[in-house]
Length: 512
Image 1: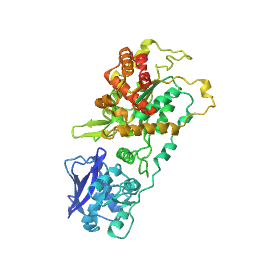
Image 2: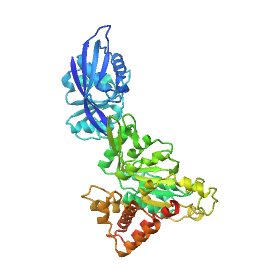
Image 3: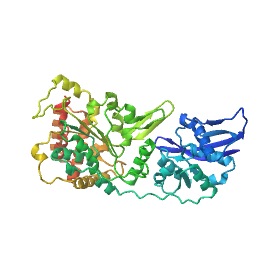
Image 4: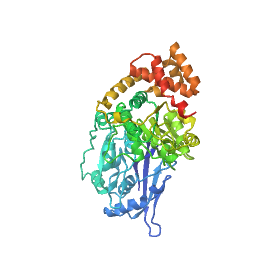
């Protein structure tokens, strides 16, 4: 008997429907088999042992040969999410479950040998695809139910075991669909983050981070050990605008596909902050694998990617950042497929000015020779540095500032100014489909970043003396536009441009 059960598989951060076709044929002792076809990977091929064991331990013995086809057969299938639909198809073919009870339903889940239904990755995009296809019911593992229930317009049924599912499909159990879990407000998520009020001194660095947050600009901090670079970077998410529902949904989909979404977590409302170790590989940074998975740049989508001790990262890992920094996406090509993952993030990088960390420090002696410092800085390529809008110096904090009792501005106050600047940018780029000054293309830079005569002269002097590239020219103008937005100015004034040029002054100090 042939039975079809609907399931789904992942492709990038989206899902596509898969027909799980189960056919039972007469059993002979010499030819007992469980065959899975349709380009299965190792995890899918091993499902025969899990499914047979789960059926047997739940009291159902299939005395037939089993052939399972996963259609479309020309796409690679991976993972263990097909265990549950396979078992449902076998039970339906055996007459335990009526085929009409499977109509308009989609099944995903991994089976343990005792019949327990285990969670799987990528439930959110699977449920979204089911809704888009007009499927009214989705059956998922109980641990994934709150995540699946985020999608409106589809009924989500949570199952704990194969026996529970049989009771549900045969009518012995009348479970109600899972209701969406109440998610914390974005404002509450912001309040739970580390606060800028904890940081003493470093007013210029705080101002630079405010500009970076307001315009979505990448930023590089250079300073000795213990000057507060990491502390500042970890507080950047606290001044970023709250995520919209669409941003939260897309970010959650990426984390769901990567399998890093917390158990029982339904929707990410706080902007992600990713801080990979410098031993990470290029595949770990941008994604990869036989069937590519999202990397750190995609997991930081709509949030912050912090790279501490930047020169310690392998050169090839840093160079693969060029495409996502420029295109806000990363494309991974393999022989059988090409995937594109979103990667729109704010890069925050930190490094010491030399291997010992005390070059140009007035209070400590540097042990590094000029040749050692040059080799250390040469680990960072010019094209990569060109893609970082803001370069700032973070000196050691003075004792008087560290022990001072004066009040320090809180993140909430800074975020108010950042949000006002972002609202201005959203109005400016309403028809362009972008949301921040950092995403402007060349044509938009020429349109929205016009200068008066004094500004033109200042920019010409800065570009000529510092030997900046055309890309750096555009980035100075983008930063100047953001400074003007924070100031509430309609046009870029000389003081705004001067501040933007100041954020590139380290080009001359360190990179030449």
